[in-house]
Length: 450
Image 1 (cartoon, rainbow, N blue to C red):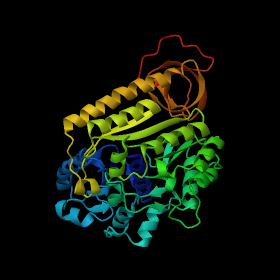
Image 2 (cartoon, rainbow, N blue to C red):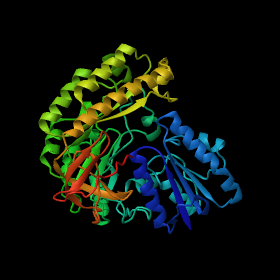
Image 3 (cartoon, rainbow, N blue to C red):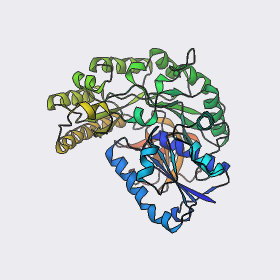
Image 4 (cartoon, rainbow, N blue to C red):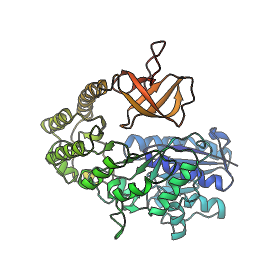
């Protein structure tokens, strides 16, 4: 019996697919990269933008002929396209789909395969607990022995409800995982060769706020820091309202916690931020970045920005441009606003910024950020720093610095899973080239772009 998984979307979906693969292999299935020979096909979907939803539906439609050819084929639709309460509506539209699973919950598929039943989308406590327990998490076959860096969910869902965001409606309310489950999973990953873990949450620094007297993210980092075999720890994505000085001090103090912070601003204009229901002002964000840089010297900072939010004027957009220009952040994940059915913004606001204008603003920020990062990375030239190497790409080893900078090195040594000092020999906006410390390259390396 064979299974195939197609995953679209964020790191949380990647982690969810790992759990599905692990669950299927516990039932005796083996992975296949050939979708046509699979007995079970899982589509793990994203709907954060319309393009992602369209892609998922297109992929799903392409499976219908396989189902008609082989009625015994099991098709499982999973993730944000299903959401926490969407199965009943989808069943009528997609009769060739056998199982509908909400995000982060392999329970309905496991139940169907082991008992021949489809549990309702509101999973019973046993099924829900199955999704939340990972003591037996064994990396699926396609990643076993290969994965150096893994993502570990610590907060499911979100209760903040920014007006542009569909996630709370699809992933449900905020739920912190028990510390024991998290640590057990990380121990398991470490025993399988994983060297770096990234703790995940839609708002990761709200970890523990839904648990009376439970540990917060800073306390969890201290617990995870003691897991043998794990050499690097990261976390994402943070929210400006919950990034405390205690958390900053913890990152600065713990050597395994990497000095890289992902903390979105989304927009630079106060009125737009208010319309987004973000809960802070431009000044609040500027002050926070200043505090982080003082507490965690030489850290890198990433942000998210949405252009063309309903009602955003050109003057308001230029506030965002100026903030990005002034703060000089290491990464800016840029997106054009996409109306999503069910969000507050779609129900109450007019999406009145044209697609052409959204693209113009996007390109302006893209060009600005490329220049900023190019200048930031030039400061690394000639420096020696430790890089954790993950894999070989086009004949060169790919790894990342503590500040999450992408580095390529040419070497005949097996560097996989090793932290090695390198000297930076070339820098660009998206990656850097290096030699192993003390080794001089005999030829000019070709540039690699990803």
